[in-house]
Length: 295
Image (cartoon, rainbow, N blue to C red; front, side, top):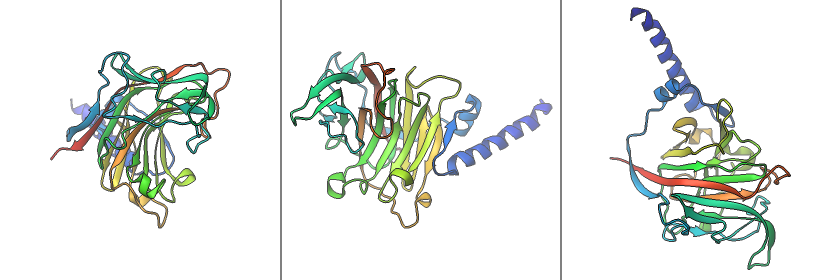
């Protein structure tokens, strides 16, 4: 047993050093998960949260997303990113089945009521008007699609967007994924004067070859006053604080935000689908849960 003591001390030193580095390094960076031992030592399971809101998607097979919790954003205007899909409120593009929310992107010619025609359809669901919250733990278990040009996201927008507009309302991208990077997801924050090139952003990469389309993964943030932490499968890979803002910029993450789930096709960042992209593609959501900090 005595011969193990130096090794234990060395491991603890590594854990402390790694925790400090993961917590404080700002800006664009990529993190690949290390050993399960190190992960558990750095990030024990959360134990101070109480459930405030959730959707377990356990309604009858074929039913629509619960209208008391979700509403649809409909249209094919590109959504500020030159996206290629038309978001609809049809069952073909969003439904509940086998305890999962299915958001399905399809390759089809579709003309909406606004006269806009697109070659792809999908869905975008929001909780604006039914649920928003400032601070807490926001988490979802999701299986992502595959293929060049797919762009699913689980994200938050400030509920004052209609009053102050974007990006003054603030945006927290808990998880974004683009099909050309099948083993990576991105966590980002946008605000006035720090969107686009100057936003907070970090990338988490799966180790060893698996892709995010192979299985379900849990994506989360823990949001407290003046700090937001990003997790994939309970692994903390980014922490953002006001001290990292560009000089003179305002932290706008101190008011309620609402939830968005969507599956975009194409756009400035992922680029369009190509001949290798198979449709339909699905984003499967097992649950969305939001917690408050327990007293």
